[in-house]
Length: 154
Image (spheres, rainbow, N blue to C red):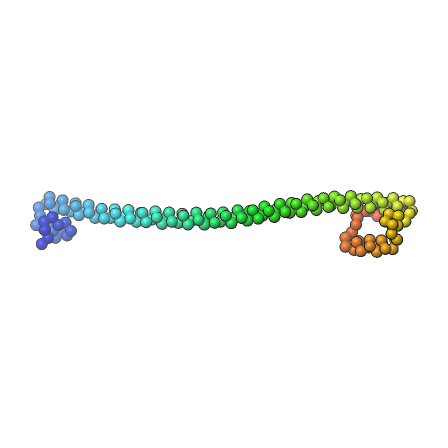
């Protein structure tokens, strides 16, 4: 038989009085609760640790994504600035070419109105050589969008 103070087994309660048995049973329940609480606290700490590790991994991933986004944004901003500079150059060239075209159209109209050989007067070349050059330019891109009534004076 187990010693009188042993509360590990219900068999030890046989030779004890009623108050001693109740006390031993309460101690046994208290011991089980303590073990259960310790186990529950251990599981809770493990869940907290796992949650903390998950959050740390998520922070790492988000920082990595943020860095990639910032790099892409920087590259895009640089490309945008380059395109803006190219657009400014092209706009300036458009203005220059428009002014040149307008001047050439005015010369053409004036020469046609006066009946002179505008090609040789304006450029100091023969009509044939300039006409060949002019036709090669015209094949690639039209030079003006003037209406047909502009030339009725010729």
